[in-house]
Length: 408
Ligand code: MLT
Image 1 (cartoon, rainbow, N blue to C red):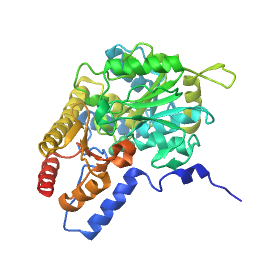
Image 2 (image 1 turned 180 degrees about the vertical axis):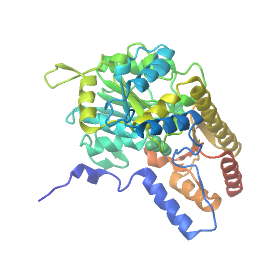
Image 3 (image 1 turned 120 degrees about the vertical axis):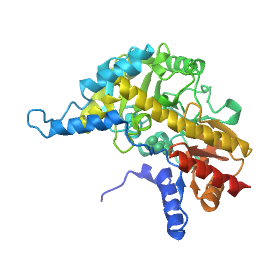
Image 4 (image 1 turned 90 degrees about the vertical axis):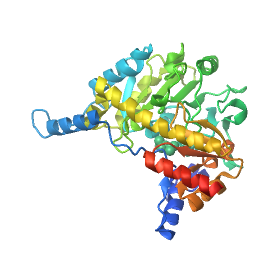
């Protein structure tokens, strides 16, 4: 008899954003005359930068001609893209990352979800923020690293609480952990970590022979020059951290799909006898076995953002969303809510002081605005909602007017 992976039965029936989409669809079907404004899932709305469109056209033309046609490319990504990333995103910020330490992929969601496969299942101590991007938790549940969900928390995880009391940046735990997930600028809170806070995490990982999985998908939104964009800006991080980056929120690639993961060659993890192994070699083995590379035109489009014109266009796009974020934060603050984020991140985390699904329903039913209920990101998310700055200016302005009327 075929049997299922029973770890899946420990999960909530559906993924947070699918849950929200279902509720919104039900509402729009019941209220076809009331158009909804979506500030829930962080999906971009602005067209791709012009340099990317041009690169896509050129690459498509190359694919149309036998002499420049491309079949399978290198699974890890074309050298032209890996070198551009190493140069602009790392050497440019003083981080020693080589092009062959960069693995190009079709999304950080996949990479953040898949990376756990190369680490032990039994006995691995997990530390995961709360609230958190649900992928980190759910993929570890699927892999069998946790017990059941008891009162909103899985057994076997050390939860790193982000609350108003700690400015939504968790401190290192007092207990040991082997695999630590961090995300800055944070999804969902929009909070950023200072250099000193990241130094404390690197020191903790060194002391515990742990690995930090650092999700910096939103680094392009950092405007405060004091805030590190990469964990590798912290000395010692090459020995304890993997970093995930994405073109989704940086350059509007949510539908185009391109991201990358950095696994330094100096990073080691241990087998049951204590023998060290190269994590880069393990991830390379996994990646080349299960992935056949991102398409050539998409990688050309991604590389185009590293040209001077591309850099300008990406800055203009992220500035645009940050201006939306500033409008949202100002309006919600005016309505009396405590807010964090929105200044170095495209998300605003709003302390509503009430049940987060109830607040979600209130905004949907009375303002026709979709947000994301904080409880969907974890227990500490209760009492909060996340509003995303990804939409047109007109929609954001209208959403804020509607929210103000609904809450009056
Ligand atoms: C979010 O809304 O949290 C993100 O869009 C999810 C993602 O990037 O997969």
